[in-house]
Picture 1: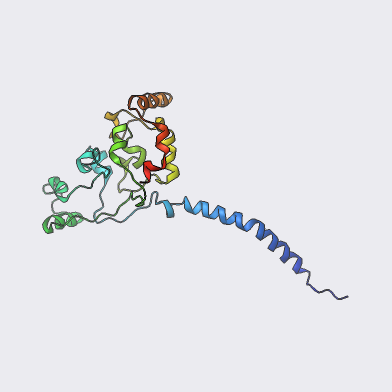
Picture 2: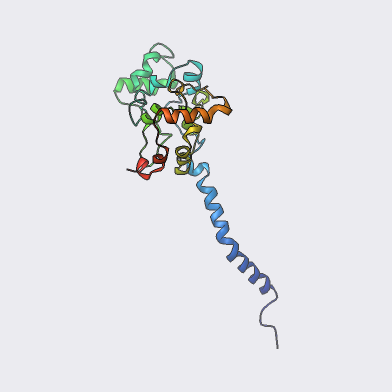
Length: 219
């Protein structure tokens, strides 16, 4: 009886079976890596801005406090962006004719705010309050990284639900005294951090069990 299938059909069938078994797993792995890639999270992705503002220069070099520009960070859910006249407090005297700062001067003259590109932009279904984090002793560095060393601002952490929950489950790893919240260089003695954190949890009456309740972030 003549052979119906070519011998290569055996190889093809094996490859097909292998693909059916491994293909879904490979798809899951690729999806997992994609979800955590900078393409999805935006981590360390540089966004074009109307003015190339340098935190490294203003915070690290000149020592300007975060609250000078982000005025509502201690009292509001939104940290706030500086109005143009805040920038011009200095730049009406310093670099007053710099071409790089032309958008700032135009903004003041036209009485129209500068349209900055948001770097840390959570979905609409997520509620985040800067004030409560500041009041409980979470430093700017915990979420924003060392902005005092950023020549142009980027997103340092993914700010995913998984990332936020990890902090909410173990806040003792990040808590610090309120006087050190805006100190970019502050770092606790490593062995004592957990002890300090537990003390602050008790002192500030932080209900750790409640921090992972869905209603805390989804309202």
